[in-house]
Length: 322
Image 1: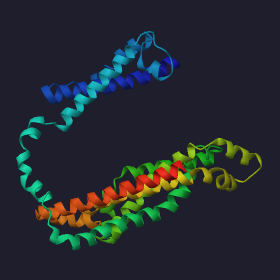
Image 2: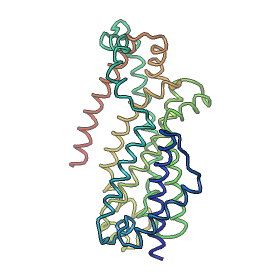
Image 3: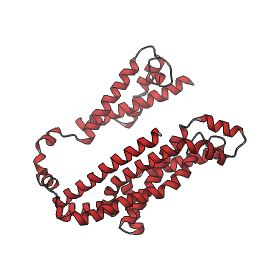
Image 4: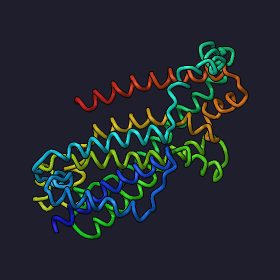
């Protein structure tokens, strides 16, 4: 059984490597290999390495291989992945080094912002800040409650609890994996273009992200107080109230402020698809090639993000240290 488990892991590792090599051969030299060959070839190195007791899979499962061949396996896979990325992304160092002149008008506008538009830009910027604030504030109660059900150390007592844990973690992962800009597109159709759609997009994404941050903090708490309160016969809610909450309040506040910082930046991108705020204005000015106005917006956003970063960093440090 152990050998079979090692073979599966090793087969998957070499399937990835051989698939990458086949793709590169086709992309660079138009040389193709049938699918059955791609699926079959990894069996050979997997069997040789596993039965020679030098495989990477043995190292992964805690055994000490006879030789350090597993290090060469990792190195080969990393180098191959970098080459794959280089080819897929179509990296063009020469174009990067020689075609900077194409951006002359954009750079000129950025470094010569149109200050005459400062007042309307500030109004849109304030809208963005409050859009992000409201999305964060409304996400806190949902994420706070659901994070307890998404913490493995609190939800492993029965099949029912495990089912709830898996369901919430899965849903939060799915909602978090969908970018806020996609949620903004959905809500722009749902409630119409404007800051409300942008707020809803950031709200949904914030709930999912904070569930992950909050629940992981719960999983890292000191078990001593929880076990002591449990021994007194306390109910589940009492255990959470007196054994868990006092340990997580400061980190929760730090994570929340950090999320507001993120939402201010994300609100700019959400505005590109109609989510309101200064992002919508940025999109409109960019479409009209008004680069001086774009430059002003970029400097204003950078200034706000800088202030938020300093403020949130200071608050997080104070909360965690205290």
